[in-house]
Image (cartoon, rainbow, N blue to C red):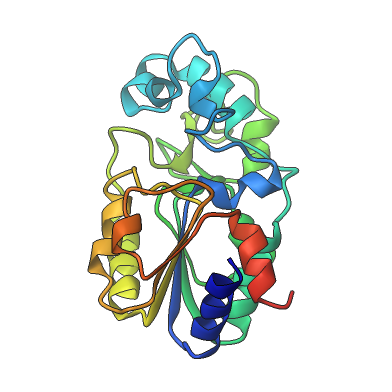
Length: 242
């Protein structure tokens, strides 16, 4: 492990175009559960599987139940950035990190100070009326009851997140793809790389410093130049003075 950390530190020190790609494991150290671990969201008991509740069809057919789940399991307004978020923000401030590409919807990268954040799956902090498109913050959803309705037109206010059966935002996806293509070093952390199309983005990396940091093995360990099986926050804190 010491040899791997030394190599990672050396690569970070000598790289000026780093891109980070992260998943749910980046936020577990902030108290936000992931999806597929033993204690993850998908292993909790609900009337329907979470991937069904978080689908476009379910949102349309069972809107009130969708929002009950969304408030209970997708919104964590008390969560604070952890060492991983803070380390990445520090790397950006140093001019080394050019983009954070995240599958998370919690906004913790921005809370830590990161500016160049590409949110593949949207954010709980942005909500909009389906009819008049007025924007609302997350507190509006938290403080509403049942189905949140726009005070101006009465339309349903939904979170600006990508549900199952919905496509990723093409502009965000294109920006992420271009950032990875240009990256000198690509650090992937807190994801098992099992969710597509997001996981397929790493195929566009053309460099020779592909780093995978995850507590468990991933589906793409075999193509990485460096694999570290540990918590992403612990690893980045050991590499970056925050």
